[in-house]
Length: 382
Image 1: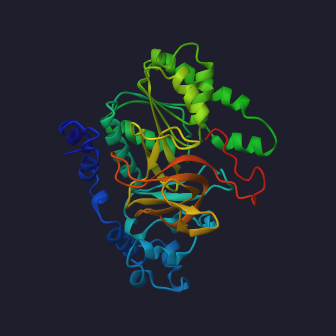
Image 2 (image 1 turned 60 degrees about the vertical axis):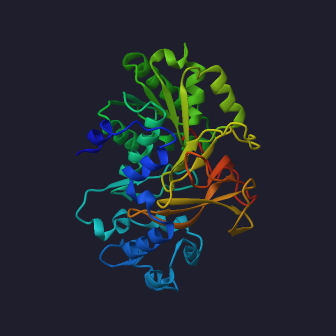
Image 3 (image 1 turned 30 degrees about the vertical axis):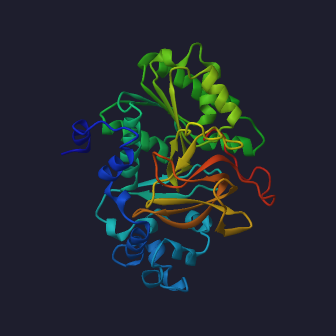
């Protein structure tokens, strides 16, 4: 039975049953993190299944990942991951030999902090689609056509949206969108206004002509679109806006909700091409809003990836729950293994949420250590 057919006959998903449903549809989510870590070591460092990128590094590590990594905590043996190594690698060196006979795609990051990185997708996108669709079902908004105001070409975001619509046989109406054009302009001292107008004009045409149910975009572009809409977004048939990529301040989020998103659900994610999608959990009634936050927390599903909030002065020490630190992420997929990558973000560490029994982050902001030159990280519109 296909995924779509199975889900059409499955019981309705609610937030009370969300975690159990996720583990039913994606059984890997029920695997213990330590056991999954050991499985990934066997996969990535065995010459028959691992990628040339990691198998070729095994003898230079100073330890044996197959023997010495007995659980997640032991991944500290790898030290901090240098993203420069990923930038320098060829795509074929990143493809696991265990997937040599399966189709694959090459995705690239947006280049926020420099030259783009390439990764290989074989199974990861399918996991993302299944998990995200299940969350949309719990919110009552899975299905319908999608307007993708998202990066296209080599960027994973657009491919993810297409996969999501395919899961329920919906149409995707896409715009031409190259996020690097804006970033190059900003780095050269220019502005993003003309290109942003180009994106908004394309989107307005599709909103009017196609009346999609879901809009996928970034927080920055949602702000720009809302300011230029001649009438409320819900009058175009939009029931929910799903955002990712760029950050949004608490004041900007409040403005959007109060002035432009009446009758429209807004679902945000935190993450990127390397880390994946950290799912938004709504505020728990009565819980205080964290400084700089919007009341939401974001939870990345283990064992595929783990978000930790660490002391900027000591990346191996997690800060206590409720305190701010720098985000460190480890990605543990058959397609992609990245241990201990320091992100460009800071966040407040949160505990588990009733919807997602995994620790999370909230009040995400750009991380500034005083060492990077101004403009090293250019967010642009994505």
